[in-house]
Image (cartoon, rainbow, N blue to C red; front, side, top):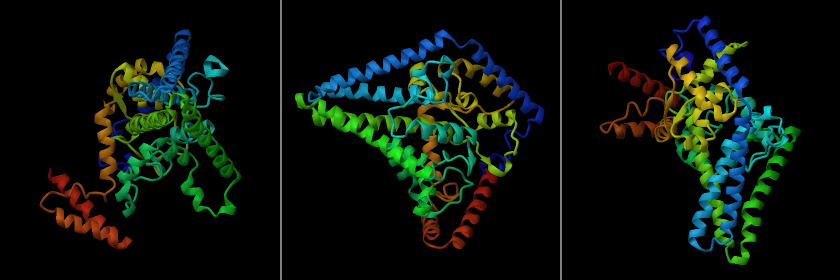
Length: 411
C-alpha cells in the first residue's frame, strides 16, 4: 500500500498532534525569516535571470538566421533550448506562483505574466497553483498523479490499458507542453459530457488554449523560419525550433516527474484528509509528498529550483533563489522529527520515477512475484487478466498480492 494511512508502517505514526502543530509553527517561522529579509538582492536576481534569458534567446535566434551552416545550427539550437528552459522553469513557473509579486513591478507580476508555452497562464495557475498545490498527492484529488492517463499509485485500480502507459508517458514527455494544455482543460471529464451540456467556461478555455497554441506555432514554425529565408536557412531554423521545443519538453517532464513520482514518495487517501486540515497537517503532507534533486547551482537554476521541490511545496510563494538556504533548515526539521527527506541525484530520481511508471503498468504484485523460472506462467496469467473480465481480473489480482505479501514476509 502506498496511501499513507493504509501502510503497514505509517511514517508519521510516531508524531503526536502537538508535534505536527509544532512542525507547522516552526515552518511558518522559517518562511517569515525569508519574507522579512527579501529585498534588493532578490529583485536583482530575477531581473538578471530575465535579462540573460532574453539576450540568450535573441542571440540564439540571430545565429539561427545562418543555420544553413551546421556550426550555427548547433550553437543556435543549444542556446534556444536553454533559453526556453529558463523561460519555462526559473522565470515563468515561479513568477506565476506570485514569488515576485512583492516587488510590485507590473512587468514581473503573476497577474500579467505570459510564458512561452502552449498553456495560457490563467489556465495553468488554476490547475497547478490552486488544485495541485492544495491537494498534493491525494489520490482522486490531485490530477498531477498521472495526469489522468497513468496509474502511479497502487490504490488506483489496474485495468489492461495501463500496460501501455510507459509508451504514453514517453509520448507525453515529447509533447509535454501540449499534454499539460490538454490536462488543464480536463479533456477526459469534459469530452465525456454531451456536447450540448458542456459549460461555457470549458468552451472559453478551449478557445483560449487553441489561440495560444496557434500563436506559439506561428512564432516558432512560421515567423522565425521565414526570417531565415534570405540566407537559405528556412528548414534548418524550422528544425532548430522543433528541436529546442523537444529538448525543453523532455527536460521539464523529467524534472516534474522527479517532484512527486519517485518510489517512496507518499500518497494520501482522500477520505483520511480532515475536513478542516490544520496548517501543520497540510505542511506534513507537503513534506512527505514531494522529493528533491541534489546537484549544483547550475542544476538548481535549470530546474527552476524545483530541485528543491519539498521547499517549493512548503513555501510556493517564496523567491526561488532562497530555497537553497531554506532547505538546510527544513532538512534539519525532518531529521529532528524522524521524517524521510526524500532527495537523490537527477539520474536516480528519473530512474525511480520511470521504474514506478513501468511497475504500476502491471497489476499489483506481478513484478514482485515474477522471476526467470516462472515467467511463462506469469505471462499467461497476465494475458488472462488482460483478455478476460473484471471478475477474473480481481481474483487474479488478489492472488498476486497475497503471494507478494508472503514473499515480503519471508524476506
